[in-house]
Length: 431
Ligand SMILES: *Cc1c(COP(=O)(O)O)cnc(C)c1O
Image (tube, rainbow, N blue to C red; front, side):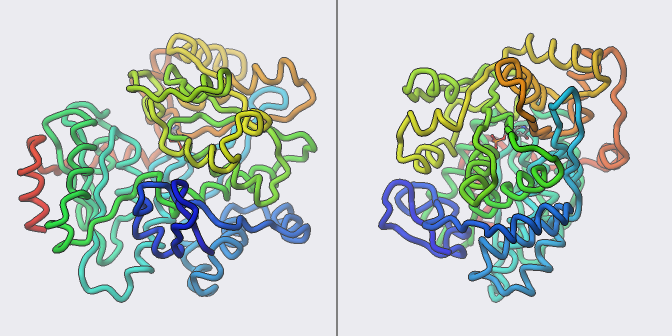
């Protein structure tokens, strides 16, 4: 399949080029030139076989079948998507799509595991190691590090702000060893991101080392996220399905809109935000005003200039009236999020995480004026990933799954570093 840059439709790339580049040379984002549409028969097949990996394989053939041999694709998909995404009814006609059954218990496992295997495949004939640089405020680092763990010929360098990620999050990327290095930066998340950006812009360094990024801009992370929308649809009998998506960089929601273009019979998507509400604001006013993010308790959604919004604009030719036909915005403050978690736990017994909570409440609000719809909200992480917040709200200890406990037992190993570029540069020169 061919891809174009959102800044200039004449700039084209193959899937392999787009994955290796991450971002287009003119700094636009890659979009598929022709989004493949599923046949009635293919939709039928998805409806019958409800496992996430078989849905993923069928859709992968459609998306990447011309770029990667079928046999290899099959193996790759089954290795990457080795868990399910079950749908559970939380209250009447509102369902949780649990995307936290992967190794780090957050939805980013899907994209990260898929991208790791795609990148590994595209570099199979390369004798020079590939270095993945990733700045993280928590969740991205763990999903990427675990997704790429033990991938031969690929090294991952996770930069994180010292003392500013939760202990459990830190353990998820500092205890792995092997091809994963954790750089503990004496600075903020913005400092980490600035270091990574500077390294990518360092031409002298790039002549010597292969550097790549694994952020949600990358198509190999974005497109696989369409798989679970189809999988959720296959699990529910409904003629009137709506998805509610807790959003930060809007990669997850963009993947849903792409699924719709592929023939998923869903017309409405709810964009659930925390106090960082530039997209709901755009939907209200037709004006897009990105700004600095503010800190909230749903911190993986603390994004003031969502990188994938450009893709949504592109998908609908920048027409506000076309976008608002399919996208409704909702925003929730921290105190509302706490209230939602508490009330939902008390009335249903279901424990939401702070991100999923915004999706659940957007669903309830939408249901008030549209009582006949079935709404699926994306539960993007397991609540036990945020014990500091959730335990206090529900008044008891949320059960920690064995998988998270195992991380907590690991021994932290990080490389301490200043936030000055010359130190990072020296480190990269030596790898
Ligand atoms: C990353 C993340 C989000 C936001 O997803 P986007 O694709 O960036 O919109 C929501 N919830 C959790 C738990 C996340 O880790």
